[in-house]
Image (cartoon, rainbow over all chains, first blue to last red; front, side, top):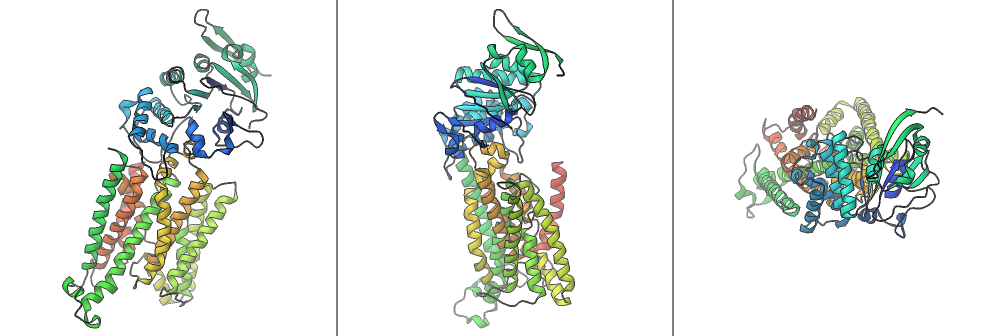
Length: 245
Length: 333
């Protein structure tokens, strides 16, 4: 559950949402994507309240990448990516050359062009996640919401996907909000952080101001060393021990 | 290849095959007939045995086979996508069991109130289906806002066994002749006897297929999961509602016409997917057409294999379908 939360995602930013299990990260993302409606308060996209838009209109502006995608039937990677065009197509419209070009561009920028005709189910975890991100990009949305996109991936794929997200944000100007348990991932790619616990925001702001040992303790009851690299400014978080309050 | 071209090619190929089957099937049977005599206007109808066999015995049977096959195969595709379960059939949600119970009651009570040439059994069967649809939908929407596919599935499976128990009870209290008729009906038989039940079922099937026409791309997205579908712009609850009612209506109409003919609704969708992939814009029309041809062919076998005896088509589809279903299970696991 989420209570008394006020957040804003500025155009062009890459915001991390951190918090322990059950802190409301996923609920916040669902509220932001409009798949769940707030019982009080409102979510605005630009200056338009989200609940005044149809699902189709929302999907033209906001795309979502889930933690994992399970198919009930077999589709090729390009079919999955083309499904991202759904909110832009009419009831009986079939994807045209323009849609195919958008899908191919999305696959090129996620490094998945070579996988286009492979069955999605036969791809590795990292490849799947990159294809799903390509599908979200093909949706031509201004805002991409990612729910723990690296949680089910091994270290190599985690780096692959996080590097991709950073590139998409920097070079393609895609605004993103990403929920994660990985503090170092968040530190390396997110410019802004939102820290959540018990359904409330306990801190929010630029990563350098927010990712402090006190905040990590308040967030997880964990004592941690936070190092800032002198030259590059990179932040690394090393958890030390669990505190029992 | 682009999507439009694929849809066109697959649909045309299936349409050609189905048309060929529909043209040939009424000319084949245990009694040889000559087409020249069938369409010979100079002979009086009463003495033209060939024309009587063609127009009274075979043509209604072929037409009802085509409609029933198309409806069951398409309903199977829609329900499998909506429930995200490749093993779902048009009979999974209890509609056919409701239809069967309705038919059993009409048979056991010896009801004989035809409306516009349609006899009481198909009417009672259709009413039974509508009752089952209402119960399942009521249960699935009672727990929370929206429509839970999990509850839908559980309610359907439970209703299936409950109705089956009632069907057994009705058969038990029925007399010998009625029980025999009841068992025959449950086997699934396309020997409809006249054009009236076909004409009566047609409006419902047309409504169901009109909804099927707008569903395919939404079904593609639903198979990725409800959350993904919603994030891609699908109104999930609305889509579930349309899919459930259209597939159920098609099933109810098909069962009222031919009885619960098994396996068509699962074999055909899977065969079609094996041939053309999973894009529902291709699968749904192809399955409807192929389902029509498949059912008419099975019925052709049923009519001729131990001629002059005519088997109910349900026996043939079950003989092919049972092993196919097992093969599918083994292949999936």
